[in-house]
Length: 180
Image (cartoon, rainbow, N blue to C red):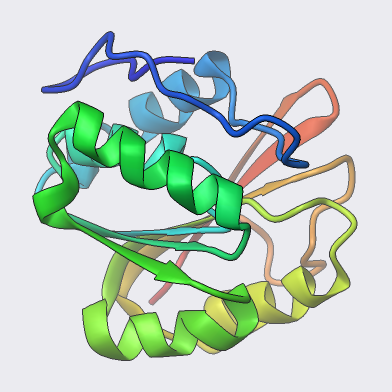
């Protein structure tokens, strides 16, 4: 895996050995950031269930003003910190360690409101659906007109509201929600 474009383009990213993560592929990140276009420039971004930080680092490389990364796995956090140093993007990043359902409200208060929230939990994590509903349906920590993007398995976490855009990549789905 590597940063696709921007100031850190082509820099390889590392992933922790033995961690149970599913990195967002280059194809999905390319689709995601092509869809966002200039919306990412100067945005306040949040990467929830960040893993090694691939999506948030891509956002920073493409011009996001800053990014909050939320991750609880110690090995992922170490890889994320190294990736931020390697890409020279650490000065615009805030890494928050802990369970996303508990840490996200703290991050939203301290770092938000967020213009773009990217949520990519383990697909079988029941708590992820509850957090996604709080963010999408209640607007928790999201700026007016903000965008929430869910990466999910075959079934999306939310039955309602309907996303403004969806795309499938085999077993992976991406759903976009725009808040009023």
